[in-house]
Image 1 (spheres, rainbow, N blue to C red):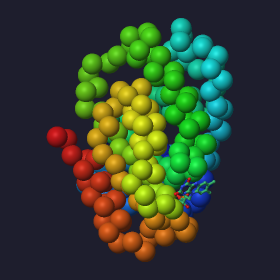
Image 2: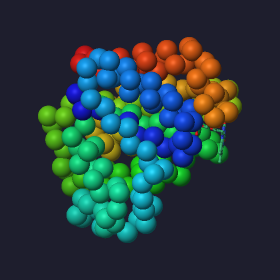
Image 3: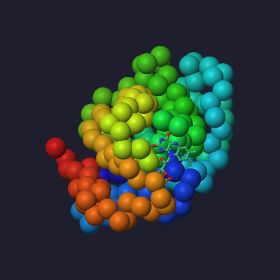
Image 4: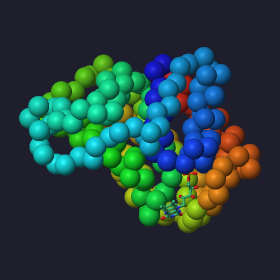
Length: 190
Ligand SMILES: Cc1cc2nc3c(=O)[nH]c(=O)nc-3n(C[C@H](O)[C@H](O)[C@H](O)COP(=O)(O)O)c2cc1C
């Protein structure tokens, strides 16, 4: 199992970080490898809509996103985590997802679909100060489309509303247990 966890929160030891860490620990306990990638620590240029990837399938920018295309290609489980910022994902997570336009182009414009990748699954983790049922709706839609471009099936989510202070999730054992459970689920083959 090759598992990638993308962290879109710029806050170190924040809520997304702690939930992803718990998920990763459960994955390791199940005997699988996982790599957490902190998007806020990478240099990922925002997409400029130049259209290069529409014909070439690759991005004109060569930066920290460049090696991530191959990592995404090799993964069979991908987790995208982000806190809610102004009702959406963070700028760091959005820059990463927008650069996945190259993958969308490969799939939908250039027909570069790899049929053997049917077991690729995607999971979303998000936290927000608000505790309303709709606060995650926009983010779910964004992440769902990102997974489609990555040829992953959207397969589950961990959403934590009412979480604001740095590391507040650590004081919510039910959320940490949910994260551990998600880690186990991610490792399942069926
Ligand atoms: C710039 C900014 C915008 C935010 N916008 C929202 C928002 O629209 N709705 C909400 O419920 N919480 C919002 N929050 C609160 C964060 O989602 C919340 O603090 C979250 O727990 C942070 O997660 P982290 O510790 O993983 O970074 C915002 C926080 C920041 C810094």
